[in-house]
Amino acid sequence: MGRYAGVDWASEKHDVLIEDEAGEELFAGSFAHDEAGLRSLCRTLVRFKVGLVAIERPDGLLVERLLDAGLRLLALHPNQVAAARPRFRVSGGKSDRFDSFVLCELARTDHHRFRVLEPDSDQTKALRALTRAREDLVQSRVALTNQLRSELERFWPGPIGLFSDLDSRISLAFLKRYPSPTDAKALAAKRMQTFLASQHYTGRQQPAALVAKLRRAPLGRAGELEGDARRAVVLSLVAALEPIVAAISQLERQIAQAVRAHPDGEIFTSLFKHPDSVLTAAIMVAEIGDCRARLPQPRRADRRRRPSRGRDRVGQTQGRVLSLGVQQAPARRVLHAGRQHPALAPLGRRPLRPLARQRPRPPARDPHPRPRLVPDRVALLARPRPL
Image (cartoon, rainbow, N blue to C red; front, side, top):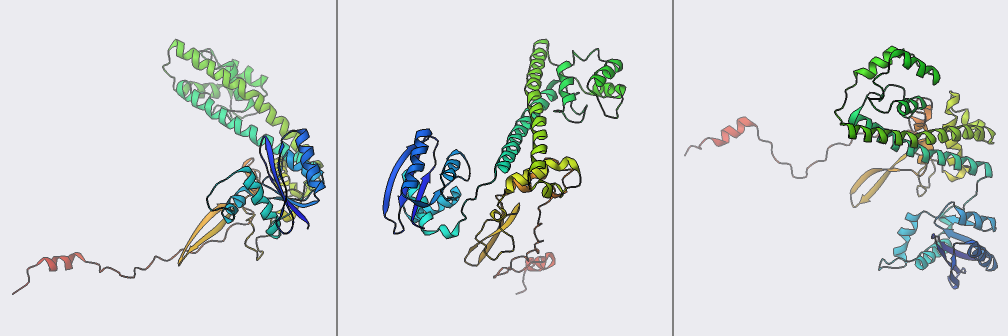
């Protein structure tokens, strides 16, 4: 394969080491993380005719530039690099230059144990960017919603559970108009009906029932200043939630269009019956990618590969003791995609290949069992023995 290189990724600079097949060092240096530095890095690797580059990142700007330069990459997991450091240094020291050396040695000696990175198509990358951006926004929405719920529980729990979700648009519109019990004091069935009509309410509850449910909620004993402060906090949280909810809806529409236009979109959307589960199918398309060999088959004899399921049994043997554990697979985004729509995505409720039921382990036998004492026999032992 010629020559090998190890690139240690950092936010400011990248340390590079190039070796030949015999392990002789040909080049060692650092390149800044800017346009001039990245161009110089790619030109250096091409000038030395590097056949394989090892790096700890599977994606990112640096990886895209290296692939665009026509280089073949080995995307190694940081845990694999950390486990290989003691092979070359016993002291346990760590530096960027040493990590580039470890990466270069792994590419030179153990490249047959790893898979060469195969880039995805532009459509898959765009879909992955949309789905991951939505996932980040959903996490922010959940955090703000929990904070809003906690604030309402302190002084006015009536709006909690009044509508379907606290972060729904109608709930946010209600809290924006009635952020405190003082604002909702004059709320009656007629005003509630007008509000529901303006929000295009499609629920089955009548306005009078909603008002009665709001009145049954306990009221806090906050003073005037505390009530005004908590009212301002509720309005601030609602103002922060509204653009996030709108952005999530916009991203979901873009994701639905992108997955239908993807070449593999029809295959994954056919796995679900309900059309609203297109979001789950989009996450699966984006995370699995175009290279199907990236996720190995579970029945392969090669057990050194990482598991492709949501959970996998991992055994650790020490002498005659075997301890079994469960580790999360790297494809957690794929198998937990059903959490977005648990009622609509049947494949999201359980792993694609459920684990085999383990047999109950028999209780361990004591090599030196102690005799069991029955209470009657204990009483006999307590009696004085005849002389």
